[in-house]
Image 1 (tube, one colour):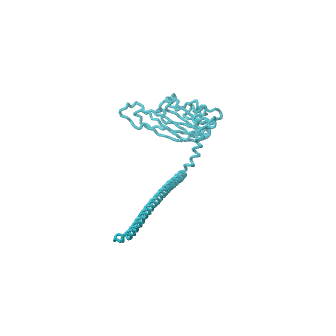
Image 2 (spheres, helix red, strand yellow):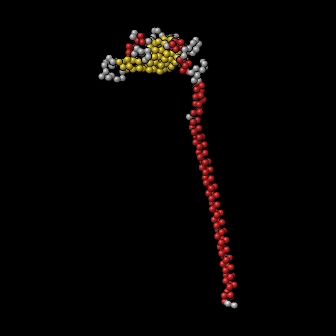
Image 3 (cartoon, rainbow, N blue to C red):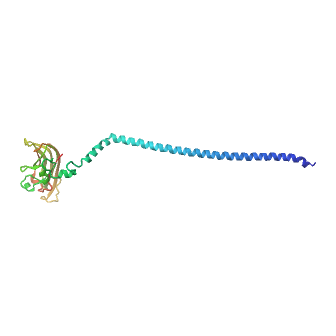
Length: 263
């Protein structure tokens, strides 16, 4: 037997060991590959769940913040009485029409009143002819005369038809000359029907604020004076618009008016 034949079993045994070791390495690599895939899947699912949880927390925080802000705004509006004004606003909207045929309030105030109805508006314009006699006299419009207001023929007063609170608007326009040095007065008073006692309500003083040296001394400058007052009187009492300088009143029934509104 040759030396090669004697060594053959040893070589075959060695090859068998190498083959076994190679198979073991292959199996180990396959196992490692499987483990890496599982780890990748696990981490992917974990990251997905964490992202979902983060979104849920963010949405919850946003909703909570909005609820808190809404409660805060409602509380603030309630403190300043906003919700208390709502019923009054709705009530005033309903009352924009009166009960006489559901007419608009403006029309109800300015239309002609007939016996028994509550008088509301008296509108009077200046009697320009009387100004030349240095008198203030008022001419009633058709609305005023039918509403129960009556202008006096003896002075600058108007009688009211009912007891109650009245809003009085008086406008007088004065025609100053450039050399006028006087200060004039414009006032609203009322007189009691029973005693004829006079009571001052409001007074205003007017003078020429500026004299232009380039203007002719006889050239006139028109300065309006307005008084808005409230007065509570009885039926038949008189409301009067007076001035201390009738000679300076501009004789125009457009620029001089007396309006009386019953509230």
